[in-house]
Length: 210
Image (cartoon, rainbow, N blue to C red):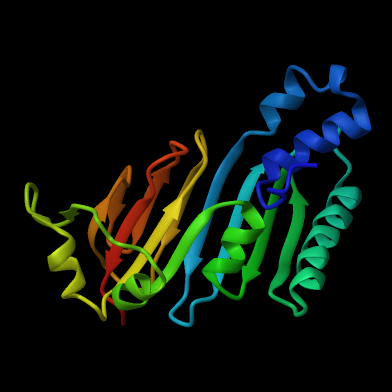
């Protein structure tokens, strides 16, 4: 099964194949599996909270089986790393809408669970972790202004998020402070950035930590 259990669209598609038969999952079932909202919020303590909301077609999918499957996958991850790093905070279906909230103890846990590249910390910590930061970043507030690697390295205490999604995936990232510089984001407003994956180039967000 697809390891990206956190994306409900993948989970629901798998259940459509398993419960209704892949041949029956065409049409309405596939349309209902599109993710409506997928957000990752990075707290000041480094904890990542993901929230997903999407349509849920009860005639194709079983809510209880979905809950069991997600809890099982989170449990498998925790068993593999030897401690509780992932918590399923909420999974509910109301009025044909599914809502899932999961909490990850670090960006590394979020990345490992979803198969992403993701780092969250300070610029100095990113460099120490092996990121060469060879990137040109756009100033969010001043169109046309950019900073380069050398200027970025001088901002060692600034917060930075580096994330690479697979092609076709879309994620809204919320940081704990205003985003100052970015590279590759679809849009940025205050502490929120919308990013789309191309499977190759990571997105960089540099923000002011509170």
